Length: 324
Ligand SMILES: Cc1cc2nc3c(=O)[nH]c(=O)nc-3n(C[C@H](O)[C@H](O)[C@H](O)COP(=O)(O)O)c2cc1C
Image (cartoon, rainbow, N blue to C red; front, side, top):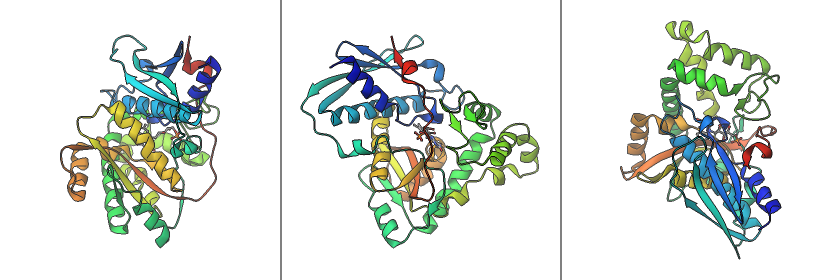
């Protein structure tokens, strides 16, 4: 293992998804190993007080690294470390052995991105391909009635979080609504990734900021924030389950794989975390799909055939992600 190769693996892992694109993963080269750390300053104190979403994000980053290593013929093993104190606790150690075969999902690492834009209206073949994504961990809804039901639940769950002043302030803090924002290409959610025009970005800043309370008092805020129409041409919604007692780090590894499977099937997807984070709504969904209490809804994806062009990924430079 050379430092150059380890650096290249970390660069590939930086394509992994993270909550609000906070990118909590930091990497340290330790001889022939890599140690994954959490940058605690990136935690969402309101949106993710328990650190669950951070751990899912760290697991996703570890899986990105394991997949990238496989492309170089290296079998990477991630061993969880139990350090919790300090500002940069060690989360996992990645060790490498020769003789791995590339996982086909690794081909989609760099191509995966959140797709929040329009979908091409799905035909029967698209709905069939969407249904085929279902598996042991994944329930898939493709019929218009179920999709409309899930869209309504998504708006209900999202609004429940959005009405909290602290949640909105934190979310706005990670939004980059103008290209002049210093974080536009680095981290967080920029208007391009959220598929907002300049005018829509200004509107979002007002609705989530100073206008939220008056609009809420008039009963208008839920309508302005509703995402229902974005489900219109979705081919499906995937509900991603894992064992209820699983460490979210491990769930995050599988979550990343689930997303890459959607990519491999030719779909663009975006995460609907509110469906999983609102426990009452998650319970209603589990009942509908006949999922027992031994499994937990980790996340959900709206997906379909992308109708539009991609956009550059906002990421921290490698020099900030690699620790000395
Ligand atoms: C735990 C977790 C929760 C997320 N929740 C949402 C969400 O509710 N809505 C959304 O649009 N994206 C969500 N995302 C996607 C991230 O915003 C996205 O991965 C990040 O901005 C990086 O962009 P990319 O996916 O295009 O690489 C979530 C990602 C993770 C890992």
